[in-house]
Image (tube, rainbow, N blue to C red; front, side):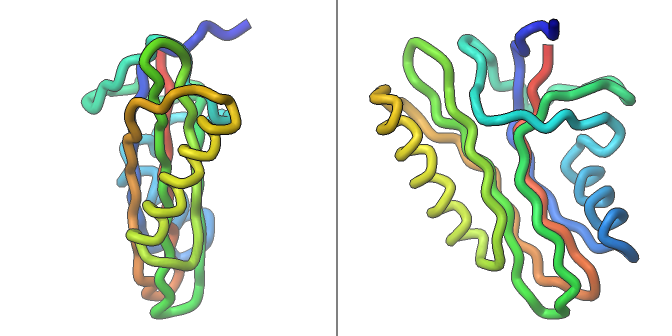
Length: 152
């Protein structure tokens, strides 16, 4: 059984590449998580997890991560990715991920509404929303990526 993560941060970045995989990898590198192994998780922030914007995760680590990404090979297309963390005062939080063919502003609007809906569905009071988002205009083959890595 894995331990419960105690730290997290929000990140978003975009990059170009010569292939879909290298565009994704280059975006991960710019997002500060390109040298770890992502384990995709669903959307619950553990109780008492602390935001650590300067968190450094050792290379090769297995990292639980909620993320959204989009890749496009349409030159001139605008793509965006966003993540948001909704925080309650006294229990767990909720993480939402979004990616689409839209502006960063639209992605931020959508992701905040997703968090509000998640809290309303759970009948929990929402105290705060933290957001990370990125917009990218595709040159040849681009990726927009946003994530919430969780750490111990």
